[in-house]
Length: 372
Image (tube, rainbow, N blue to C red; front, side, top):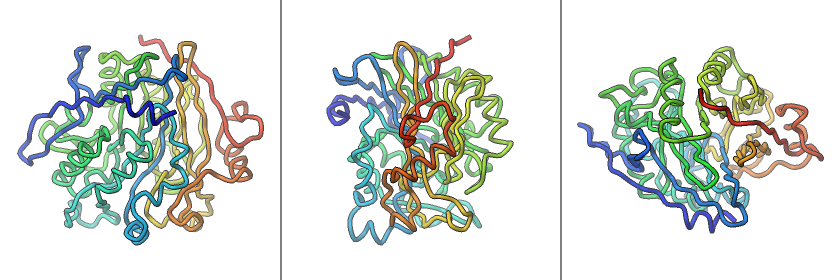
């Protein structure tokens, strides 16, 4: 079970270089294999020997509309009905908020700026989350100070953070998950949200899509020894179908050599497709997201996808399952979908041949690509 696995997970910390803002970059390990990477050594339990399982979950933010419930019931409250589901060897979420006590948003006029308590990170860790991607449009809501606070809070909570940093070199460090079943790297990329949010050689931020960043991500991962490379990306329009820009970057990622693409950003879930045999989950929707949401406004069923990657010597597979995430329905406690909703979701979003008997989950089997 994951709890025994998590007890043996080793997170090595090497302090990054300080910058003028005082941003301390933690949870990095300088790998002897090659580039500087954020490394986690995941040792599967004996029952799981020969395979490595990684759960990818969607947009996560413990605050905003959920804050009165958090204050009343505690930060474990939103996770109560999903805790038992987080039993993979390793679990990653998209943390779509700054973790800071700062009160002045960095981007004037931005409609939504999120600042949340570090208590939420502790709750995520207790529930079974191991790492957070910061490559999104909210990590820099409170500027470099907010990002420094976020990285420090992640360090204290025991969660790995990747996809944003005090400089571009810090932000583009891959997450490398090492195990006896092989090494898996996760690369965080996001749309370009402007200078204030984008990392440069001397500016804190995230890694924006470009031909360079797409190729550099997979190159860094392979140089660090990864046999399997995942792009965990933030793109698309809120509550909208997959757009041409997402398809363009998906093709770029496939051509660059990524083995799997997991998308977040629109808050609603989109269809999973195969592009030259590479699974592309264009949007897995929300996980535990504290904003009220607007699913009814757009005529959408508020569901997210929990995506489990299993890597074995003979190949890889994705298991898709359904989470009910519409806060008008679940009152800020996401939960597994009822069977009828799960079947409806798989029929709408999963490739038809992959839908499992009973229709409530789907399994896509595929082969990792051989690096060129």
